[in-house]
Length: 405
Image 1 (cartoon, rainbow, N blue to C red):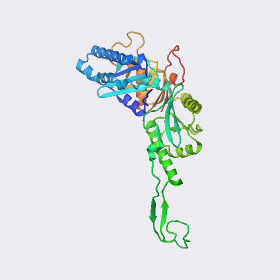
Image 2 (cartoon, helix red, strand yellow):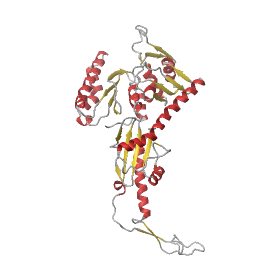
Image 3 (tube, rainbow, N blue to C red):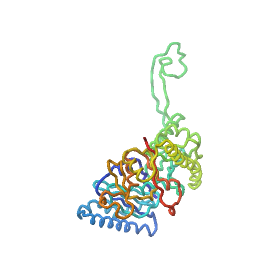
Image 4 (cartoon, rainbow, N blue to C red):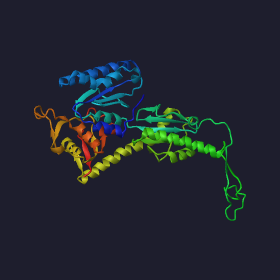
């Protein structure tokens, strides 16, 4: 299963797009089996639905086809369907197209509005909060992505990586560097240090211990660079599986990704993937739970201090004004309405006819709150999904937020 890491920059791009016709499409996908052969047909049908909706809104056919063309082109590419996750998200607007393979299945839906519908995207990501495992030996490095239920090896971004790829296979040789110098005052002349007597000084760089360590550090730095490129901007826990000495050296090179400092899994050399996942999960699970618990504790403190908002109208208004630091929302929650007076007033559409005359302004204010929170560099947390619960039988929870001021 191939997954596209959803980076903050991707969410920022989606949140920044505001046009008359922002198209959001979600559908479950299948990596293998008969259902996988039906996925291109399902996507084609969903694109036809969008076509009809845009036509009903008065858009000209050439403009509709131009808007849908990036997705129509993908339907025809067999290579696109050979690498799928459990869900697919497509976002289209004039000059904008994003295709994202998701780790969790999603409900089939299409929406058109002034902003992209990002609630299902965040919900799919949080319902399968990832952790990562770097399985490291002196010979090779493997990188894994795990969730509560799944564990898979990352087969791109330069992984797996062997040490030989990095340092090469060299013929034994002795490279000598010659230096000369002037002896320091009272030099003995027999220590082999540069300039002891003004005599020649030779430093060997062959296949000795110094060079082997240098090669190992070069290999580990390359591994750390590739891990950093993959995890750039992500805050998911990273578990290191390596023997103690190698783990210590790698930590010196690590720069990007939240490396768990409380421990690591022993060398993965003889561990099957199932056992590697089990051992890593024991370290990653507490870190994931602590993240959510810390955020919820912060909300309680903020509410006590009068720096919190609750309910769709209050939260949507605060988010529109850039006041939201952290938004908690239920991905299933939907509330039509519109904003007035620079976002300071939120109007909700409840029974039929209440919003009459404002149909063109109406949008899902829960999604709008998510968009505005991301735009102002806040954090949007899908609560129900993040808690790992299956609450489909319960009513969607109203949003709440920690305010900046």
